[in-house]
Image (cartoon, rainbow, N blue to C red; front, side):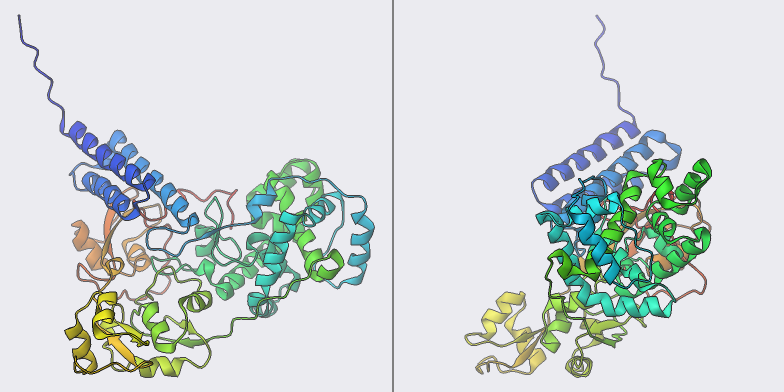
Length: 530
């Protein structure tokens, strides 16, 4: 009898088994709440594929495995963000309009005369229509849940209303457009939709890029109230120029001008309410315009609808250019403010460290820039991303402070010129020569080249040099092709990195595609317009 000899597994089969085992370990760690361990496993799985020597784009099975890992872990990361965690990035919050836009509500007949009376008494620079659809949303916003959404938005509006009003005025746009931001995000800069739209005005990444909003590893200008408002105003101006009607422009802002144009061609009506009646627009869009109109009516006459809200105070600031990366905690330690205040002033910042961009402006509480400059004078710039300041409190000792920051007493004493035997005075500030945190070390990102990408654009996107990209990926020229996967080390340490030069006229699309970073849409869909 012949002995049965197990058939040897091919190299690709062994690779697939190893990658899937790492990915499974990552999933297990994620579900157990061990995010950092999960990220290491996901990265190891992707690294194994990228370092295997196989051309992934030429092997459908390996490419499908790669895409599955990246797409799945991106979904995990979004869940972590919404749970208030995430992989070292400021967490996002759900966009409130998604809760309402897919629903329908009854009409309270008693509400119509009340709303008609209010409409007659308020001034407006956009047309305000009052029909059963608008009344149904007015009715919802009178319920406890609806009222909570309205009150949250009207309260937060106080922070940004002056800025939005000024930008709309500078762009020559109607002031009432600001209530679109109430509908889109309830004036929450970190609002994130299920489709990936982000910010006060819920821009998709590719649309934001068209209107000059930058998105890098360090910042996302969709979350910058002033810059995103200007982009939204210009986008709406273009849409109004195309359709000549504000309701159609709003609808196109939500579902894309292509969908609105198709609806017009299909029905022969260039009228939002006719398109609404004939169900030729997506359901969310059919509700989108009435929601804006209902919120506008309430915002203009809140007391009439029984809503009493004290708006938040505006967020005044003064701009300061660090010139070099700096940890936000060093800033707050030095100017005696809290991290939450600094984050409110700088919602576009995604990390705890400012980008390595010479002209980047950090927004500070008024009157603190001079204090910050003076306080940083005795800390070397290259230590701004790791060193801290500590205000001595009663009961503090050199030993307790050293233990808290995980440094030696000798290091603290040396940098502050202290005798280790001398008592500490409450209120005095000590420089803490802490080691760089793990999140600042260079991190490997895998990026799949998309149509229209160039090596220079990708280098600008990640704030690295093109020659570094070539060296990391063994490239002999600047030529890259669609589907190619590049290894990129994000700035902060590790491989030699230099600040990227600004290149006029170069823009880049897409996001880093990595097991622990968000993935760009693979194509610009007309149903995801902004």
